[in-house]
Image 1 (tube, rainbow, N blue to C red):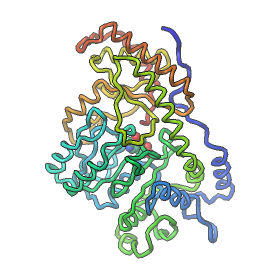
Image 2 (image 1 turned 30 degrees about the vertical axis):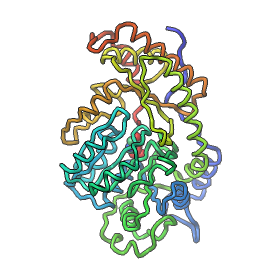
Image 3 (image 1 turned 45 degrees about the vertical axis):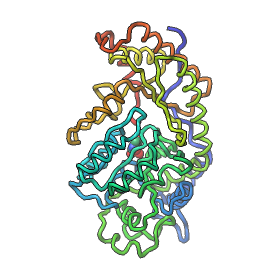
Image 4 (image 1 turned 90 degrees about the vertical axis):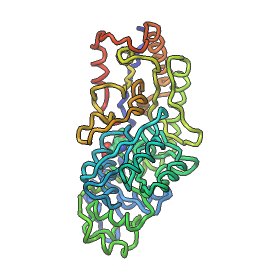
Length: 424
Ligand SMILES: *Cc1c(COP(=O)(O)O)cnc(C)c1O
């Protein structure tokens, strides 16, 4: 073993001073609830909604308690009923099937390609077999499928799209911001995503009836007039009494933390992509590593990187992950049988009807994933890539042939498991 990387893969940047000052102001006046406003005051939550809608280029925006909450709220507002089938990517994070199952609907899993995007052939087939009218499309790990083709396939199948942009806030497809291709889109402002308010979510849409229902569902009571990024009052005529109130509002404190972060999101995305490029350049030096490639039309945000070790058997991958962990480099292995810290493997969601997705299994079998916090410098990223390349080449040289599956010493892997954080 040679150099060791000493910095944390889960350490975020501090909240900007301007955001701290705004949050302190909110605490000083005490009106934290989004509908608790002084005469004529437009609250931080309303302002955030207006600014985020403008940033994405959407007509309406609603701020809620989390992205998981945003997805359930969007499904209810779109008219999904208990028992309805809802299509979703087999490769995503547990809150997505959780949001679908949580409203009593039935997740129908759609295969994932080796490029980590939804499989259009399987999407069309599953839409037909299930009769589902909705798709929750996760741009998992920031990989954006061909959105023009997606819109086409879903249009033909009569499937309405709700985008899960938890990993694509600030990204886009062919110049169009991520979240503009479906009927609605959901974003996360949880600590490990692209803006940090601890917890939080945002929904955007151009559809007035949908947005009115979402606002009432998020817990507006009769305060729906106190939104500056909402449809006009007549859109609420039915929704205000017919849609259940499932309280999940954002508060002014979080909105105050987010507004200055939104103003610098573009710069943050560029900083992520510089780090991504540094790691990617480094990893390309090893023939044992295959980077998950991205389309030239994809404006991704490189807040994490995914790569494969093709031809490595499970024990060789465990060995490689544990050696990297010993050298301070935290990798996640999505092919691992038992979930550790996070659950992104569909077979660990026991609340979902068992389904088999062999193509997704193959895509995840030798897939590794690494977060790239902005607290890393460019030289840090180069150092991390060098460690991964050394360990991949060493493991490869030690005989990583498929099927070389002796159990080996697993103690190093336990270290890797503990270091993994909960939120993808
Ligand atoms: C984090 C995440 C969510 C849920 O976000 P929360 O704000 O934590 O509820 C949904 N989808 C994906 C792909 C995620 O990574």
